[in-house]
Amino acid sequence: MEKIEIVATEYTPYINLDPESRLVEIKGESFPENTFEFYTPILKWLKELLNSSGKVTINMEIVYFNSSSSQVFFNLFDQINDSVEENGLEAEINWIYEEDNESVLEAGEDFIEEYETLNFNLIIK
Amino acid sequence: MLNDIYGIKNNLSKKGILFTFSGYISQPILSGLVKSMQLKLSDIGVDTKIIRVIFELSVEVMQNILNYSSDTIEVTNSRYESSGIVLIGYNSESKNYFIIGGNTISSDDREGLEAYILDLNSKTKAELKDLYKERRRSRSNNHDRGAGLGLIDMARKSSQPIEYNFNNIEDSENLLFFSIKLTV
Figure 1 (cartoon, rainbow over the protein chains, first blue to last red):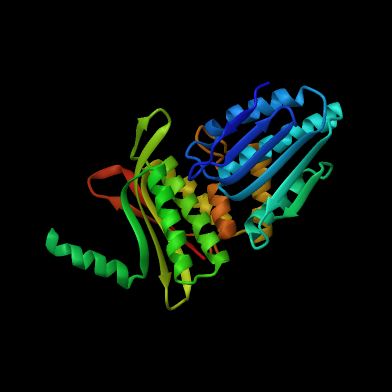
Figure 2: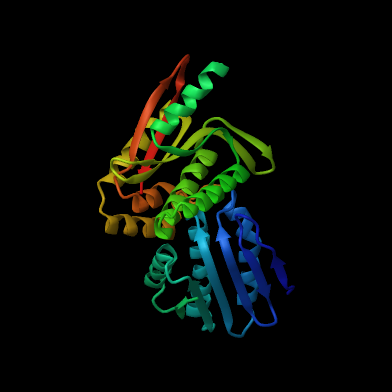
């Protein structure tokens, strides 16, 4: 698998997909015009990573995301959750937010409610 | 025409409009508008949390226009420009910020849209949260260009029920002008 790095734009986040450290990093603002199209290669890459063994780390440091991105993040966590439940994969999700960013904190709490068994950490930056 | 410009500008100012755009909305215009608004509101000392909600609602309102306006042009591969209007302002009497969006829709969509908004307005914040999560799980409103979660998100974040209006369009029976107002 190849390492993929995508620079941030005004409305898409920085993406770092590193097969060596088995890390997915999504950082910045996410409100693309065509959210599904933007994230499809990333979800594809992740799917491949989840097929190989070893702990996976997801660092999400999002300042703002739109409702379509929320759907994509859900799909991403869903993929991970399936691998954890079905294949016993070890995964750690770090949801990193600025202290006063209640929207992002609440969104993180919503995800925790969805996936009670996932190792999902809320981390103040 | 030139004679009217001051009147148009003055009317907008009297209604408390701080930012507005009318015409073909594209993703770069949307982004430029919300970013400059964020800076301006921060400069004049508006609370960060309020700015964030205005930002979030403005993006959803404009992306709704982009995705659902009946007057949409595909500029390049999956890049669109959609005709509409967005107004962001402050009501000094109620001391609330507001975001208004407007675009043409097919008359056939009126009934469903109105029923949907009324249903959202009848729900508590907790019920809206549950609905949002349920729709996200089922992906039932997903389409090519979005998750179909925008209106629920707006209802969750607006401090007042969603206000909306339909105007008839001259010389057109098939189209209506739909506008929506959210309050922060």
